Image 1 (cartoon, one colour):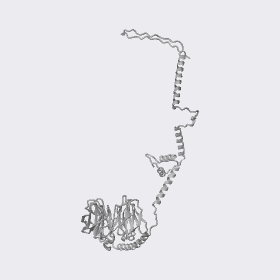
Image 2 (image 1 turned 30 degrees about the vertical axis):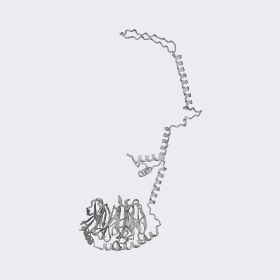
Image 3 (image 1 turned 60 degrees about the vertical axis):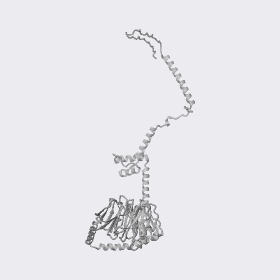
Image 4 (image 1 turned 45 degrees about the vertical axis):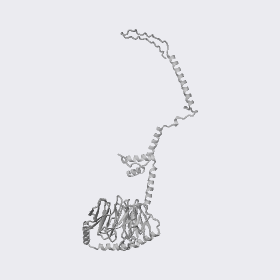
Length: 491
């Protein structure tokens, strides 16, 4: 212990010489002895005061309900593991599991595994070894069984998709069976006659065929506008020649259909019955030749799903075909004239038997709306195309889809069988040239089989919406958005 003796010296402050007042003299005080006892007393008194104040504060907190004191319960500190320690232990465990996981050395399998787990198959600057380690790290978190489960799910989904794409059948009606038998009996003799004609054509010398083709191409190059007629107040969406080539039927967005004389383009009759855009109007085979004026000679369809039948005597429909819930874009007559095909935007097409006056076939198969339909000249096949960009060829005698046509990147709005029956469905005329209409306001004639342009039919001021060739091969008709139709004749 050190005894602290303090000797305080009083220093006199010298005042400035300029001051008149004499400096105050401070008396000095001198303490003798140790300060330890005094300091201890001071500290003891301060602690007692703090304890009393703290005790009063605790009591006040208990009375206010802000302080709760346990009744002797204790918690061992060893049982509390910090959150950081838990994370470290989990990381050590994950690394241990990762070392035990076996990962393929095939980089393609590694990428497939990452894809199956929903991970990116590759990262920027990542090599095969890094990719393997990333897959191993992911599997250490989700578990090695996750990859097997994912692969099983993929196989199950693929199996389900394959089952959906399989052809399936259901029992048809008696009328459908009778119709299929009738179609088989009708088409087989026609196919035989067509093949006989093809064999006879094959016997023609190459020189003769070349001369005929050159004459045809020369005639097509000389096509010129023969007649132009304003057909309606709204765009003309469709045109079709009668079987005897003496009339032309036009359909308009105004809901009106009209019959025109050929080649002078005089209005014969206005057919009133539709209330919205008419998509097509077509003559029945043999109309105006063997059929009476009172017989059903035309069929038309509209955007509201209505289908109407007409004769050549009246300007009102003689019958309505009901059953379509969405837009009907095209109607097409079977070569026999007994059946009528309709395409609908409910992803299906239908076949109607006019003799029994009922729907005998409601055919699905397209994933989107069906826009166009064409029957083979034998009467055995039907081709359909639509908004799913695929075409299908159906055997009417069995109900099978016998040909699947793929290659288009956009919607199919038109298709047609070649008259010789041997080409795939395209909009061809007489098997020797192709006629197309486009939204560039022109129609074009293309050679066959080279498919080079022979003639551009220019003159419309709007997009060309419909084209047709007269059955006698002398005239071409085009209908347009500019509300006119034109006839083209070779000079």
